[in-house]
Amino acid sequence: MKVSINLPKAHPAQRKILASKARFRVLMAGRRFGKSLIVQRECIERMLHGEHCGYITPDFSLAKDFFDDMIDLIPPAIIQSSNKSRLRIILKTGGVIRFFSGEALKRLRGKKFHFIVVDEAAFIPDLKNAWGKVIRPTLTDYKGSAIFISTPNGHDYFNELYNKGVRRVSGFESFHFTSYDNPYLDKAEIDAAREELASAVFAQEYEAKPLSNKDNPFGGDSVIESNIIETLSTKPAVCFGIDVAKYGDFTVVTGIDEDGVLCYFDRFQLPWLQTIDRIKQLPMYTVKVVDRTGVGDVITEQLQASMYNVEGFLFTQQSKQQILFELIKDVETGNIKYNDEIASEMKTLEYKRTMNGSLSFSAKSGFFDDGVMSLAMCNNYRKRLNSSMSFIGA
Image (tube, rainbow, N blue to C red):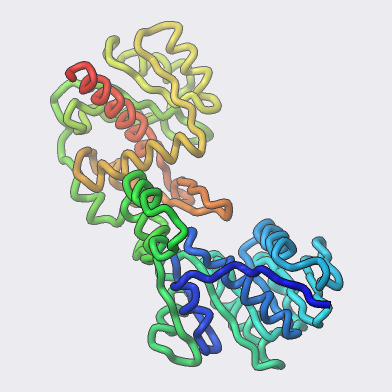
């Protein structure tokens, strides 16, 4: 019985990877290049020849997604058995693929493979030890091969493996491609991401350039320090941003003038009623943007009931990302100025990419981000105010 298999067609950049004869390949590529799809194709081709493949992802959720992708690609007529709970597919050819999570690599012990895929390798916990002590030994019996694929995550062990492949040592060969190298992606969409995202984030996520400070979205200390002012502006504030204290944090109030220069800064820890009284001392007719997330909602409602020009701002993953990207862009272009306290917080702000592709921001453990969030809210309102004034002027 003949069975036709329609595997994904490789685009020109992907064909270079498939043509490599290196035992160990490292692919550093931008988002949506087609990293996972091309190695899934290779796994199926190997399984058709009876090979045993292992597929490692950072977590079980992604492993289950790729299991489903493989089931969709393989004709049912050639599948001998599949078990989603065990994340295993066996073909009638004798070929097998098993999926593993980087969170539980001990499950690889005792296994042997012809071919191993390490997907999103830069996000595998302790990749160096995982490769040397767990993954590499599974290739010994069959003198198997491996491919590491990932978007970069700074100068980590994945980056070390990439550099090893650049030098073509120890059987390694490396490949580097950007998101632009996928001919099926709309280039205008990538350009739009360049405009929206911080330069450092775009460089790592789309151009596959590892950051020296891998987790900081502001692009390094020199960029942050270039906008520090020694004294606050004496011009009046066009708005205030108020990040309300939660669980031991500080309440921070920032104000910026029409030029984007910090003109007001206050950081304090007080009970709610005293916090409200302190905020009430701000100029009555200047807009005050208050974080109304969680406990801030109560304070925002009380302020709105007792004073003018109070706007609530709800932090969600999307809204936080938006105002932080606005702030980062203005830091990069020098369109906002701030004091040393806020600059110090910027240096300890981290961004992490989740497996669903979204970005999350938070201060490093033991540090605060109250001042950055206060300034981001304030800057967001200033930009909206400037946009409305430009529209009126037009």
